[in-house]
Image (tube, rainbow, N blue to C red; front, side, top):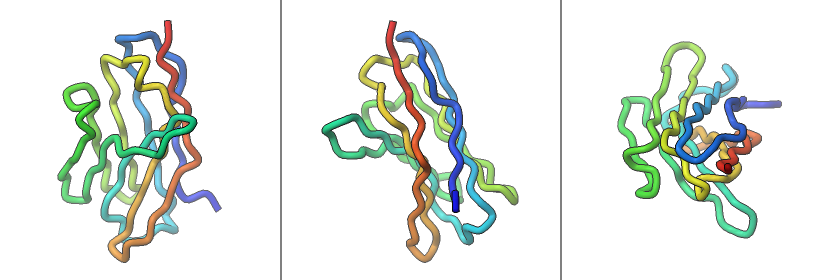
Length: 117
């Protein structure tokens, strides 16, 4: 069963923008935190940004001021990542993440973001 559905990745030139979206299945109950992580080959998956149900956000230092995470807390939980001023080092597979109030964690299938001229 697919619990988190991501969209919005692709190829963009340096300085460009992309918006990622992630919609959670209604079968996930009591979602607290949603967020985005990214991973490049040979490296560990790293936090990009997270947002709690109450709207508190946390960003990796490398993306502060360029990326913005937001969330729609209506019946279908959806989290967005607006990525501006993209750099080649932002190239990675981006994964959506959701954590419930019971600390159960879900991951999306990943979406490729490539920043290249």
